[in-house]
Image 1 (cartoon, rainbow, N blue to C red):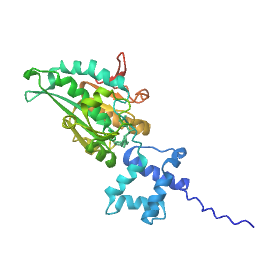
Image 2: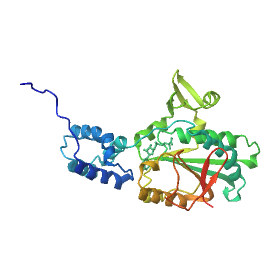
Image 3: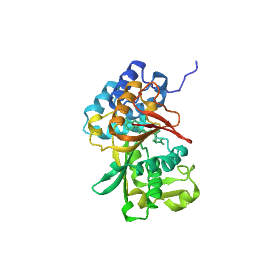
Image 4: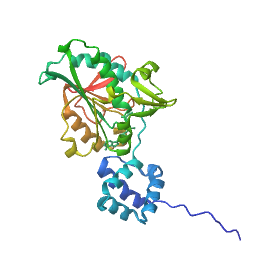
Length: 292
Ligand SMILES: C[S@@+](CC[C@H](N)C(=O)[O-])C[C@H]1O[C@@H](n2cnc3c(N)ncnc32)[C@H](O)[C@@H]1O
């Protein structure tokens, strides 16, 4: 008789997975279909083993009530979020920002605040910072060329994400050449300090206008502290949400955008079938949604 020495593979049973999936959904809007169970199963089981927790019910109880609740939730967000990003991702949108939208905003009077002209941009779901730093590079380049003292613009970028680990990376501002794969070498030379052959640190000037903050897009209480924005970037984030969560977040974006403000979504995303509140604007190189 052959004795199998193969260890039995542990798994999360479907009923338990539904329970965990609902907990995740209620907390951050990310919705896992059963077919996607494999994406998180091993990580969750490994964490449960580390904690010596045997059932999903106990794991959820631990997430809700343990003394280290916040750290444990951060770890869960590490397991469940996809943080893929890069500098100048979907570049045509940044060309539209620079060539069309900034020009339009500069013409608006209501951007005066206490004698200063301000422009405020939100990178919602900013991951490890490549998106907000790209925006900062564009804004610095654009407004830095205004030499007249009367033309001084104050730029503010709020960059938020639910995942604390990626935010920590963003705050450090050190990137591999892979993150810069779509970036013009001239921009790399100008905006980064090379700290090793494959490591680049974003220069301080591009950090100054960015505030990084941990924020859950589904937590309307924490969103209520946000100011109004001229432009919101929320690219490749809503794809992980179900219709209901998308609607909730988009309602909030509408409320937080100034009239005339723009929303950018990811390359493959659209508001079709979700909301008709925004006007679709087709620029030559990319599209954006406008609050009229
Ligand atoms: C694929 S990345 C997109 C990064 C960047 N916007 C881009 O397009 O390159 C999606 C990010 O959304 C964040 N995210 C997912 N659910 C979130 C939520 N409920 N609140 C805030 N951020 C969330 C994830 O942590 C992740 O960093």
